[in-house]
Image 1 (tube, rainbow, N blue to C red):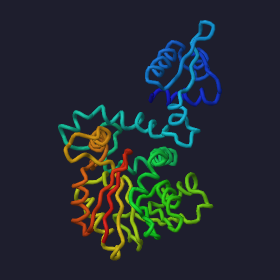
Image 2: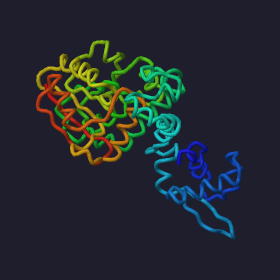
Image 3: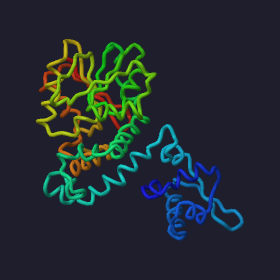
Image 4: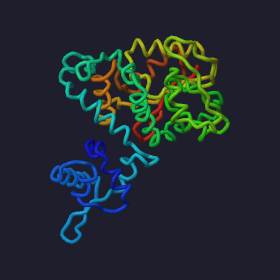
Length: 321
């Protein structure tokens, strides 16, 4: 799947509009005919391609699955997530044994960059930043509505999305709650890219606020959203950030965490368990059980902490001041 995406197999089949032979795909994409034939056959086995015989020749076309999720042009594409898994996570997992032995990130071994410099590395060029932001954006094409509607957030009219990146969660919020205004709080260069590539000027209820949430002041809001933020950090850093948020909260305001939750009985879900290994090989953080998030929020001063499962990849935890 990684290789087919990287070579552009699914995009070519979409653009051409009809089934193609392995030889034609190989010629168009500049690969060996034999190698492409084997790749396309494997993709059929993975149910990513359809194959049919015509005059003794095998012709390949996309399945609905690949058409929706693996072509760049699809509004629900996960292509950029796949690319990140292929080009980054796959390399880090080559050092999983070392990560288990040492209990720390292997990003430096995989790429020659320390885990502390991970985000600086991701943002070292406009091209790299755009790739990472496209990854962050793509998953909310699938889960965005579910996570912002798991709780009724209609009473929160002034929302800050801390580390909001591309604004995908902000868009989901204003779609679900027309009375709300959402501010994306992130680093200046991230917001510049968001405005250029992801947030349309017509989306007037989305605004930008530059800042580093560990260092700079956090403005007043009714609700603070942290989507896939807390899992990046150690317990101490998580508590530091959540305490900073709590200090600016007014009574009745809240914080919404969006994360992949582990089961309390440690029996799943397998996706979150594998995500947690990924956080080990790449960052300082980990995925957590609901009770661990509740404990973090209560230690930071939040009350009435509630957890909701969405049935998708990501779940939500709401705490109030």
